Length: 229
Length: 229
Image (tube, rainbow over all chains, first blue to last red; front, side, top):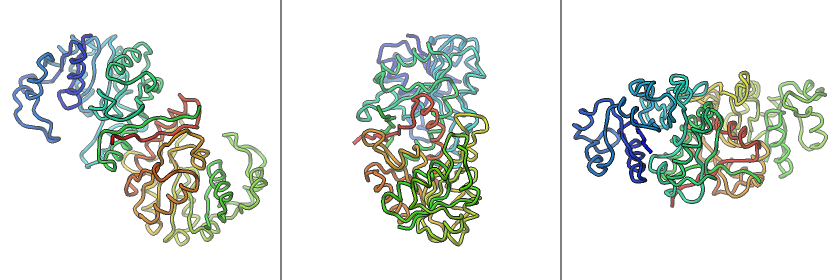
C-alpha cells in the first residue's frame, strides 16, 4: 500500500520503518526537506538526526508535506500534536479528501514539565479538531495510547493488551485495523470506541499513561481492558 | 475501625455496606438527615430511596456531616464530585485534620449528556483541590477508576486488574491499601501513582472509562496495567 507518514521524529520513524519492512511503499513528509537532511545534532529528546536513520532505511523516501499527501493512500499523522493541524494544512485538504487519515498525535504541552498537560482536552480533542478541519478526510484515532516501539511491535508487552480505534467511518477503521494486525495487534486486542468523539477518552488517558511511565520506569507497558463474561 | 462514608448515593451505600459487613463501625454522613430518611422516590439514576437500603443495613448509622467527621478515623468521600468540597467544608476541617481522607469522587458534569465531561481536569484535579483545601487531611485518591460494585468486590472482573492510589502521605496510602486488601484487591493489583498530583491521571481516565462502559455495555470491567519483565 502507498503510505505517507507525517513527521520525522521518533514516532514517525518507528512507523515508517516498520511499514517499509512490511513491504509497503512508504514516504515520510516533512515541512522542509533541505533542513531535515542537513541536521547533524540529536534533538532535545536524544533522538539522533534524521540522516542517521535515513541511511538505515533507504527504501523510505523523504518528501515535502504536499508530496506526502499526494503519495499516500493512507496518511499517518505522527507529527508533534501542537503542530498537527498546521502540518495537515500544509499537506493540503485536497490530498486528504476521501483518504484514511490515521491520527496518532497527542496534543502535549511539555512547557510545565513532566508529566505533560494537554493543549486540548475534556470538551474537545485533537482527533475531533482534525475531523472538523478536514471534513472530507476519514479520520481514525488510534495508537496514541502506547509508546511508538509498542505501536509497531505489541509483543514488547507480554500477553494480550488493548489498542483503541475511534472514527466516524467504519471502512476507514477497518483499514486501520488491518494495519494494526500487520503490526501484531490481534483482532481481539482492538477496542472500537465508536465515532471520533471517542478520541477524547483515548487522548485524556495520556495523563495516566505518562504518570504510569514515571512510576513504572519503562515505556514497555500498556493497559488491557478486562471484562466479565 | 471507625469509618465515615460521606454520601448516601449508590457509591456511598456500596462502600458503607461492605465495610460494615467486614466488621467496621460505619456511619454515613448526609447534609440533612431528616430529608434523607423522608425520601420515598428513586433518584434520576434509578437508585431506590435511602430508607430502603437502610432497612437492609441496620448496623450503619445515618448522621450529619460533622457527626460523620467526628466519628471516622478514616473518612471516605463518596459524594457527587461537584459537591465534594462543599460537603467536606460541612464536615469541618477540624474533623479531617490528621485523618486519612480517601477521595473516590469524580468531578463529573453530566449536563451535556453521556459520556460526562469533568469540571476540573488537565491542569488540576479534585484530589489536588481537596488536599489544598484541607492541608491537614491526609488525602488519598483511589477507587475512582471502577464502578462502585467493582470497588468493593474486584472479583466481579476476572483475573488480576489494577487499582490506583495517589497521595502525599505514605502511611495514609498504606491504610488505604489495607482497606483495598479487605475488599479483595491483592497487593499486586495496587499501583502507586506517587503524590496527590497522580490523581489527575486517575480522574482524567474517567472519559475513557465511561466511553468503554458505553461500548462494552457493562460496568463490570477494569483495566490491567501490563508491563514487560
